[in-house]
Amino acid sequence: MTDVKLKIIAAAVKCFRLNDSATLEKVAQDAEVSRRTLHRYFKDRQDLLDSCKNEMLDRCNKAMNEAYASDNEPIKKVRNMLFAAIEQGANYSFVKRIYERSSFSEVDSKKEFESDNVKSKWLKIIQDLQKQKRINDELTLPWIFNLFGSIIETSIYAVESGDVARNDSKKFAWTSFKGAIGLNE
Amino acid sequence: MTDVKLKIIAAAVKCFRLNDSATLEKVAQDAEVSRRTLHRYFKDRQDLLDSCKNEMLDRCNKAMNEAYASDNEPIKKVRNMLFAAIEQGANYSFVKRIYERSSFSEVDSKKEFESDNVKSKWLKIIQDLQKQKRINDELTLPWIFNLFGSIIETSIYAVESGDVARNDSKKFAWTSFKGAIGLNE
DNA sequence: TAACTATGTCACTTATTTGAGACATATTAC
DNA sequence: GTAATATGTCTCAAATAAGTGACATAGTTA
Image 1: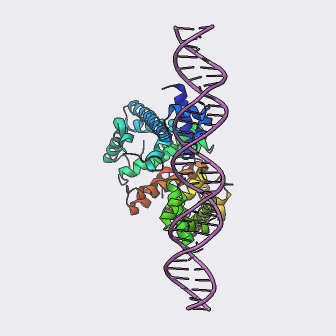
Image 2: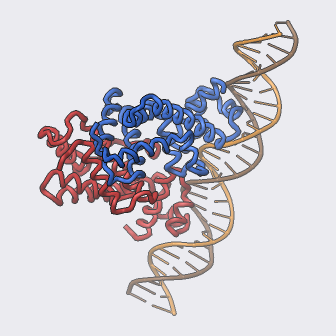
Image 3: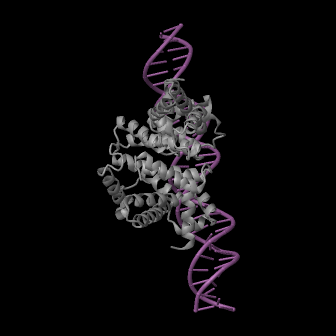
C-alpha cells in the first residue's frame, strides 16, 4: 500500500471517528491531498470506509495477537491485550464503533472481529479464570467482554481529552478492569 | 409540549444516536409524521437537535437529582444515580454522546451538563470517599467520572443488544463499578 | 353546519456533496 | 532530456437533503 493511500486512510479514520458524515473534502484536506487524488485511490466513499475498516481491523488484531503471545501467564496476556488496544488509540475506537453501531456500512457479520481468534482466545482466558474462581463468576462473559472494550475506550478518550496523563491512563484502565471483574493478582 | 413534538423528539433521539446524520425524512417516518409536519414544529435540523439536547438533558438531570436525594448514605446515592442513568437508556446515551463528541452542533460549554450541580454533587461524594480511603485514591476524579459514564453506557448497550438481561445489567454495572474504584461496601 | 386547527401531499428551489473528465504541472526514473 | 507516473486544478453533472409555499383533507369545536 502506498504512503499516500495510508495517509488518506489515517486521515479518514480520524475524521470519521469524530463525525461519520465528514465530507471527503475534509478527509482529503487532513490527508493533505486533493479530493481528486483521494478519488483516484478510492472508488467511492464506501470503498474508503471499507479500506479503513480492513486496515484498522488488521492492525488491532495483529497488536492483540502479539500481546496475547507476549507472555505465558493468562492474566498477563489479558493485561497486555488491554495495553495493546489502548495503544492503538483511534484505530481501536474506529473498529469498535463500527461493530457496535450500524451507522457506517452495515457490517456483514461480526466474524471478522474475531479473526485470528483473538476474541475467542480472550474469552477462553476469562472463562478459565472464572472456573478457577479467580475472578467474579457471577458476571457473564458478554458483560465482561463489553466492559473490557469500554474501559479501553475510556482510557483512550481520557488521554485524548487531556483528562488523564498518558502513562496513568493505562495503569488506571488495568486497575479498574481488575477491580471490576474481581481479580486479585 | 405537544404529544407530536415529544414523539418527534423521541424518534430523533433514537435516530441520531445510531447515526448522527440520519435524514429528517427518516426521523419523520419513525415519528409517524410527514416531513412537512416535522418542519412545522422545528425550524430546521439544528432546532430539532437543540430541542433533543435540552429535553434529554432535563430528563437525565432530573432523574439523577432524584436519585441523589433518594437516600442519605453517599454510596447509595451513587448507586442510585448509576441506576437512574441506566434507566434513562437512550436518553442518557444521547446526552453523553453530545458531550464527548463535537460531531453534532459544537456544544457551547460543558456547563449545562452540570446543571443543578448534579455533576458536582457526584464528584463531591467520590472525593469524600477517596479522602476517607473507602475507595482507591490513586485513581483521579476525572478518570472515575469517565469510568462511571462508560459503565452506564455499557450497561445500556448490553441490554439493547440482548447480551445481558435487563435485571442483570444494573447489577453487573454496580458490581463492576464498585470493584473498579475499589469500594468495599 | 361553519370555522378552526393539525396534518398530509405535492411541487419546487436551493445548497451540498459526490464522482469523474480534461488538462496542466511536477516529480522521478531511465 | 524524455518518458512515465503522480498529483493538482478546474469544471461539470448527478444525487441527495433541506426547507418552504400552496392547497387538500380530516378531525374538532363552537
